[in-house]
Length: 182
Image 1: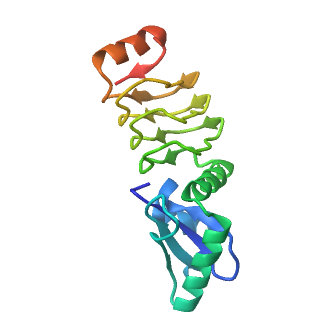
Image 2 (image 1 turned 30 degrees about the vertical axis):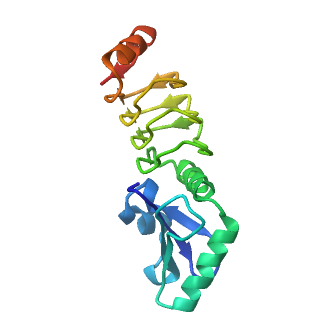
C-alpha cells in the first residue's frame, strides 16, 4: 500500500472487489477473474471525509454516484481498509501491505497472517493489536518507541524495528530471544 488505498468495485453494484493497496495492482483482476470494463478503479489517499476519494469510470455521473455510495457505506477510510483486510485474509494471499498507514486507530488485523506484514508507516504502537502469528517478516521500522508494543507469539521472518534505540531493541531481544530483530 502506497500512501493510499486503491480498490475496485463492480459498476452495477457496490461490492468491493479487492484492494490493490493490500496486494499488487495486477493481482486484482487475476484473482477475481473480472473483465476490466465491469469495474471502476478507486483510490482513497488520506483519512478524510472523502475529499481524496477518487472513482475512475468512463461515465462521470456513474463515478460520482459510486463515490457517494462508497462514502455512505464507508464513512471512514479505516472501515474500508478493515474490509479489504478481511477479503484478503479470506482469499489466503498470505501478506498484507499496510505501509501507508500512519495510525493504527481502528485497525482490525486478522489473528494470523501467513506471510509478511508491513506496517512501516506507524511511528507508535498506540492502538495496535498485532496478529498472534506472522509467518513472514514483520516490518515495524517506523516505530520510534516500543511503548505499548505487544509482539506476536511467533514471527517467521525478521522483525524490523530499525528506528528503535539500541537499548529498546536489546530489551526486546532479551525478552524475546526467539525473534530475529533488525
